[in-house]
Length: 443
Ligand SMILES: *[C@@H]1O[C@H](CO)[C@@H](O)[C@H](O)[C@H]1NC(C)=O
Ligand SMILES: *[C@@H]1O[C@H](CO)[C@@H](O)[C@H](O)[C@H]1NC(C)=O
Image (cartoon, rainbow, N blue to C red; front, top):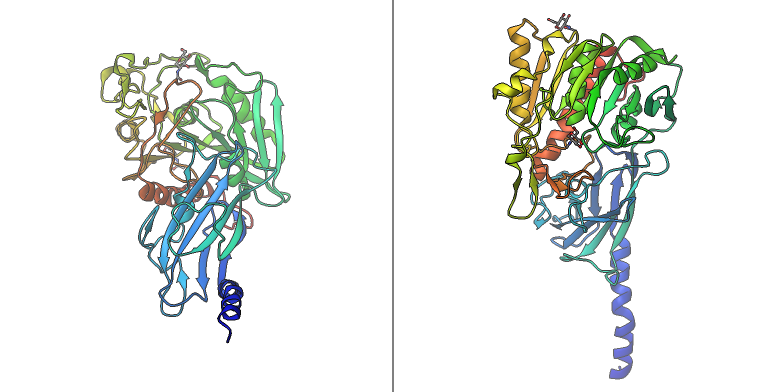
């Protein structure tokens, strides 16, 4: 053959050959659309035996920040990479970890927390791309062998959201489809204020009527929290119990951080509360005093003299939030023994924002001393402060409006994410067991 013709034929044929190979590769992702707490199974087939590939995940959140993760895999002799069995050789994690790509998503902007804000309008779209060979930072010039977009929803079909602005109460109510009645739950987040709905909407997707309750820095509520007035939370509880789809006689409450402290106070003083989940919260009243009718618990102020800035310029609040073994904190301890219902304490042992383990232990010891034996502790080595429903990657550090420095929450990716998976199942079991069974439960 004329060498020139040979050259042109090869120039045409080689890309065709690789395109044909790429076209044969299968990337299967099951399910492609699901609730954010459902595990996803990724499997690649029809690769060349021992072929090295990169799986890359990316998502852009509602604030325009991009999150990415990648891992390298070697195909087996059958040309397959099944994430249930194949160990990652490197990248953002190593070893067998079917949900590793989702769990290790990291922001391209420093100190940014991945959080779904508009739960009703859209899911998170996570793009999974498969590349030949090692691709640490794929650019838009790199053509993937295959690409697929996964939808991760924070609300199930048929769940309705109602904006709540009734009396003093501000928040969002999530109601599952069907006639009900359903067990009711109040959902509280922490010291940054505002309204976070993603956990409430996920809980409603399991069959609870859930009120995501704001208590400051939202709508016409005060911008800062200067005291905790339980009458506000009582009004919210009465409002939720009056809802025709809420099954009485009582409610559950779940809170994180400052929200956990308030949840414990609600359990203690409000007769409506029958089951309580406290995630990494204090069990003494800290910084903002508590009022309820004739009850007044003074707050222990933040230990300002103990503000520590880490080498990397982060704010370590661990010591500011105090130590429950100290007498001052004992004087402001919540009298948890008065709570009628059981309390589940969920603790990350690597919490760097609060000595949450010591606080939970102090509350449980106090309850026992007074003969209350239904407070339980679930503690997780390696888990940090922000224990959320599964599907959220670890947030080790993020900015909060009230703080001029980013706050260090703590935790290591793998144990933290596994704690989220395990504790979520335990929370659902605990709420269902104490508030009554769910209809069409798909836990
Ligand atoms: C502590 O309480 C003061 C008001 O007494 C409030 O302005 C401040 O935001 C609180 N700090 C935190 C971190 O909650
Ligand atoms: C929890 O403990 C309290 C105090 O001992 C008790 O009155 C209550 O009946 C218990 N509740 C449950 C659901 O076991």
